[in-house]
Structure formats: C-alpha cells, structure tokens
Image (cartoon, rainbow, N blue to C red; front, side, top):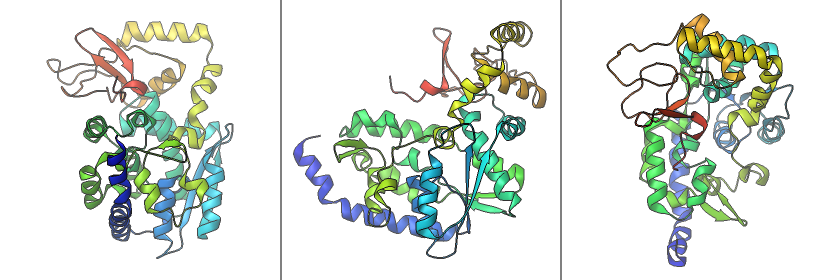
Length: 347
C-alpha cells in the first residue's frame, strides 16, 4: 500500500470506527443478556464493555489446569475494570474426557482442531448452566469478519488479496457454540454476527482490518481503534490467540500422546484403517475417533455417488475446502489430503 493510500485510510479511521461502534452497540442491545463466555480477549472485552453499560455481567472463564492458559490474566483484568461477577473454572482432564463424547456427537466430527477448541466451549457452557444460565453472549465472528487470524498479516496493505481471503473465510465460517448450547438448553447470542454488523464488515475496505501500528502488524485493527478509549492497552493490543491457546487446550496433543503408547497407537491405527477404512493421523485424533465411533458410528457416505473424503469416507460438498468430519482437506485430483490446520492457508 502506497503512502497516499495509507493516509486515506488513516484520515477516515475515526468515521469508520464510529460507524462500527454504533452498529455493535445496537447489536448488543438486541442480544442483551447478563451472561457471557468471557476470555478477556479483545472481542469479548468489547462486548462486555457494551453490556456492562446496561446490566451487571456474569462472566464465565475456563482454563485447563495443566496448562499456562493466557485467558486467565486478561479475563481477571477486564473483570476488575468492568465490575464483572466473574466465575473461573480451572478444569482438569476428567472434565476434558467427559466433554469429548458430547462434543463429537453434537458436531458430528472428530477433527482435532475443531474438537480441541470446542471442548473449552462445551465445558464453559456446562459451567454457566451450573449457575442457572439459559442464554449467554459469545464473541464468535469477530476474527472471521475482521481478519483476526495471523494468516492475513503478511498481506497488509493488499486490498485484493485480503478481500479474496476474507470472502473465502466467510463462505466456510461456522461456530460450534450454537449447537453445543442448544444441546444443553442454552441460547447462544452472537452480536458480531448481527446482520448489520456482518454487512458492514463485508463491505469494508479490508485494509481497515490489517494495519501496521506500534511497529507491528495487527488484525482486527478497526476494532482496536473503535474501542481504544475504553480498553486497557494490554487488552487492546493483545495478540490473537485461538481458543485452544487462550484456554490451554493447545497442550492436548502432547497430553494425549503421553497416555497412549506408540505400539498401541500403531495397532489401533492399523485396525481402524482395515476395518473402518478411516485414516487416523495422530494419537489425539484417535481419542476423538474412538468417542465418535461409540456415539455416532463408523463414518460412511450417505451418497456414494457424491464427493467423498479420502481419509474418512464421509461426504463433502463439491466446493468444500475441508472435511468437517475428520479435518482432512481432500485434493481429489492427486488423492492426497492435508490437515485442517492448513486448510485456511492461501498457499
């Protein structure tokens, strides 16, 4: 991006930020409730700031005991600033393994990335329900709409590339909190996905989302600017951390690897491939697949003539970039697959 273009972006940032702030505040009012899944990230902190103007918030934060969960520090900071009635759940491995069957059943998936993130959401929803919650707010959608992920950063200033990547994301974005909440009798409300906020984001020059400031490149830049007068710097300039990093479930692959011997894994992987025709990639996925097989069954195509995932035999849509069932990314021309962690890359 040239100097003149950047000056144009900067010259209009206050106007754009004010419009976004107005739309978000209207969206929160439409979805107002006192309960929140609260990570202390920029997304939930913005929503909490708005909600706190109308009701006292009950915030529910979950963190894996065995990990150094980043959310704890920031959630406590914002809870103190906003006078949130804050409930912490430092969950252990028992809660993780209790959540897995319900997560894979509700989502119909044993994709490690999806399950790993959704375990925290399920535990958080159960925790909120134990306090009587029947409806709550989440920060879903902000990263997808406003380019929060690191993969966007290397295209700072490139309007065309950012637009293409965001449109791709908008076509596949999905959020597990709604079906997980429904399974528990909890209504999940998502102000960032309000139609007016979505329309604003989808028509916004994407260079407002990815910008350089303080010597670094930031995603969700316009969100940070819109609330720079109310969020403390530690939160406003907090880096993007996936749910698994913030809550600590990012250690689950290593954690589960220690629980399964190499010989047991090799034997089970071989048997599953022979009997179920399912490719198991690692020990973590094995844990999720065994739960999936128990509560859902062996994956198979409902339509054998439609496109089929080469790793698990589930049907996938013709335009799908990832198998929602196992996390593979089928490349049918070559017959190979990559994992879901790489499926959102533009490479």
